[in-house]
Length: 498
Image 1: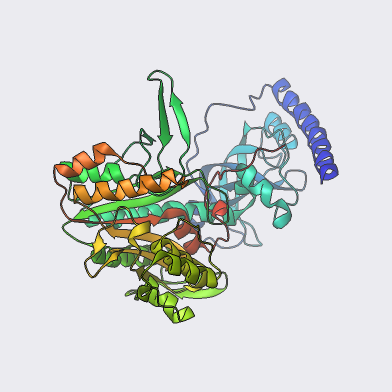
Image 2: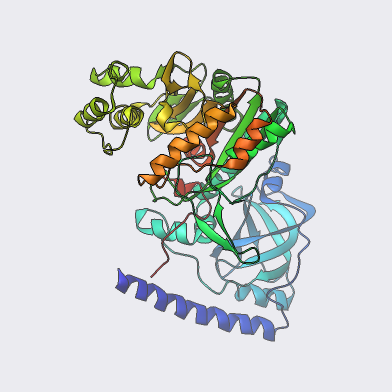
């Protein structure tokens, strides 16, 4: 592997030297190889639409200005394939149409160069829409060659590490990241149509909260203050609900969790989080279904998707199944009939779940669910009845104090959404935080901390509310059939190259 890298570097140096020589020749000819602008007036997609009916062999007197990156050169530059963000344009360069200095420039072009072309539109006898160049301008001379062989698993690390090369070479990668933008825009449109107000909350927190996760730590020099990159926007969004900024609000933004990497985990990730007053978690189930199925229809044109070769129907309604019910159905063990922590831990371990010695009944049930059920939930399902022990921000279930009014939505075996009936009783919330602090004292680094200001905010009164979070990255993975979270994040977190 090291030998291949050294060969590649030698080749790059050799090609770069040849291109540097061409760069100097361009300058000697009086050409600025990096001008400030070019007055482009047409994109490839516009040309295809405008001249769709142009017959083979037909010529026009229509002069256009196009620009893009050279992806193919044929016949010593007579034919060039130019790619812009919307598609491909064929350019025909001939000495009878170009000034001598511009024809000389054509001879100095390489694959990867970005050029501008002005000329007349025609369709070749073979049916290729073409611009006959009358003027050619170098806009950015590429000093390094594009990869020759770029597809396949052998180049996976290079794709993520040098995303700009991946995007140049792979239409699939460009489509995935464009689709991500469309998915986010569709979510935003739907929420705004429902009367939600989009807000922004801090990325730097004095107390990390809103989720059970280990934070990144930083330091503010001027204030001499330790701060944390946010793990969730929840507690600040609820403060806005207390303040009455809106009875419906949402944020789409980054969160940061100091955790490991996997095909479904990146330390920096994007989430949608929203809150609505005067409803509970059941209303959030309907909203989650509408948003996810609706966005699939908006972006893909259908609610049936294919992921990893399996068809998944997203059309609502989706089933609601309790965590304990699913575990009992799979294993025969009824955790609701177990009434002490030791027996719960023993039952979970008998199912192959890893359970800490200090874990209570709730963590044991959650571990059993993760070990026996979670990965098989392919079709969309709302899993309800989350234990209170693992849900410090969700209201208790009136029918069973061990449980909460919380659900997680699973699709393809992944948690895609998480929602609660939000706690608005300040004394209950304080007690939950204090229980989390006891877990921290016993070594749980992900347990939440007591946020006194948030409890004070609740003491001023927060309306009953439902809250919902949707993981944008995983949703994009599902809707683009992407096997790794790195495929749907433009610049994923990677170990430094060494």
